[in-house]
Length: 321
Ligand SMILES: [Zn+2]
Image (cartoon, rainbow, N blue to C red; front, top):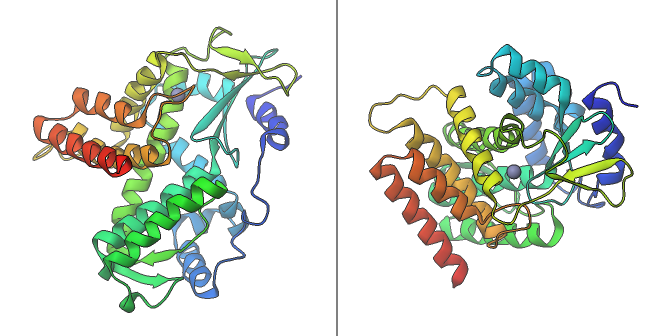
């Protein structure tokens, strides 16, 4: 019998993990890339709190996000969340996150897929390189001075193909200068906060209470997993709650744009990226572009909505080609 949700999560780890054996390390990366990565890490606020080993296991990722998200919560919700739900990272091969529940204690474990986190980190960097190649300071495929827009477009395509094949972002890696790194860092932060907040949205909405939304896990006795519903109402509602949770964490200057516009400009990139990985709705989640439009219609100004609709249309067209 488990005495807290972390013990339950730890018990699932080895059975649910589907590592990509020869790729789940950074061994295949060149020395130049590793040197810049670790020098930056050591100098960062994470480098002062965590060892390189912990960083590699993404301990910092969840700790940091959870702290940020919980700032907007009342003590009552924060205590209930901490007493019942554990968050972790797993190379699970699932597209997003998956939720498991212990039938006896009611503890929940929410696992984020490691591959998708790594996928988006690199994708968003390559996307920045495509728009502003002059901001690349290092590339594992050659001297940045010899590379241009078209090279980064090819790298992005290669990145998508590799991820769909391996569930791991094997392929070209880059480092950006400080200004570009900050811009991409913000996109990554909003996207990660939203992924976490969506899952917390399920908790806040009561979807994790009782057993109604769970199905028995065939491989694991006494364990249930959070199942989809065919109309996906719960997913849209969790997006909505998640959006509000993230909005609470952000200080947004509401002058030219609304808070919704600013958040959606980041989330639109995320949903369009998800769509490129999987253009169809799944058993658990609605089509990513429908999720994106649903939020944009509700939270954007007319200008923000138009920008979002254009991005969605372009993404849809690029996949249909
Ligand atoms: Zn969900």
